[in-house]
Length: 320
Ligand SMILES: Nc1ncnc2c1ncn2[C@@H]1O[C@H](COP(=O)(O)OP(=O)(O)OP(=O)(O)O)[C@@H](O)[C@H]1O
Ligand SMILES: [Mg+2]
Image 1 (cartoon, rainbow, N blue to C red):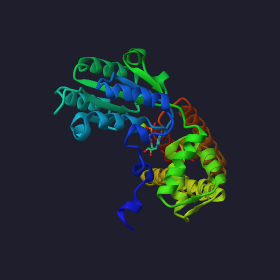
Image 2: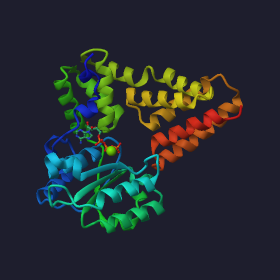
Image 3: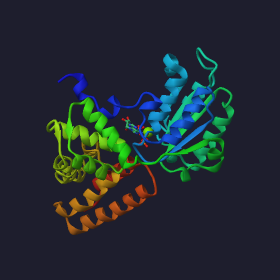
């Protein structure tokens, strides 16, 4: 198989210009006009997963800077495992110097800002102020309510929504055409049904389904989404129970990517699978309780993978 065939469609088909973005019309229109004036304010993108936040930030950067975007854009993640201090140092080192080859202020794109503590956000706010002459910040989060007011008030806030059915169907039809797939009407419904407007999830499901054949059917989609699942979820749990934490973690990640599952989907499956595990009732109850806690934190908006990891860790550590 060629390299190309291994590539993830979500990257292969990530829109590269404003015109390739589906839905989010009002947002695209305003962002486009900021870029045309070559003057963007600090921006805060808030909204659910897979709806175009990172995509649009990259489009802004590439449209503003063209060939020299890499030198003038820092893309980083607030939940970087090495900690916010490292992130801040990185931002400072980058923001300290002027743009290269242009007068347009540099851009720092900071993903997952809602994972920052209030203190870290205060520090980020000071950094934003300190370098606002040379640098614009584009911050991204799932819930803007987790972002402190002083940051919100410095940013123009854009609230992203899941794609409506009509737009999601357009994305899928476009991919199907490019990949030479035929796709029945009911399969489109099914993809919308399981993705709920999350484009990343929809594209991942389509890609997995296409591995079984060029004809995409409703049953095919539901099979991809539900099949393999219980067995694989059980496998992850068993690996964690055997205290092979790292292995369980990577199985889990594969599973999520392969089937385009959200953290919440995984939790529901775990909850069902607990009863099929070969452990004592007491152990089962402990795990059920932990699941409830994890689900609550996800609903509150904390990082899904971090939460699932912590659930796996507690399963690996639990005392029978
Ligand atoms: N509005 C859209 N139009 C077309 N494709 C989209 C759109 N939104 C997302 N996609 C597709 O989904 C993929 C993931 O989108 P993106 O990285 O922008 O999500 P995000 O909103 O940043 O999500 P997260 O909160 O998980 O970071 C993109 O690579 C692209 O292929
Ligand atoms: Mg993103």
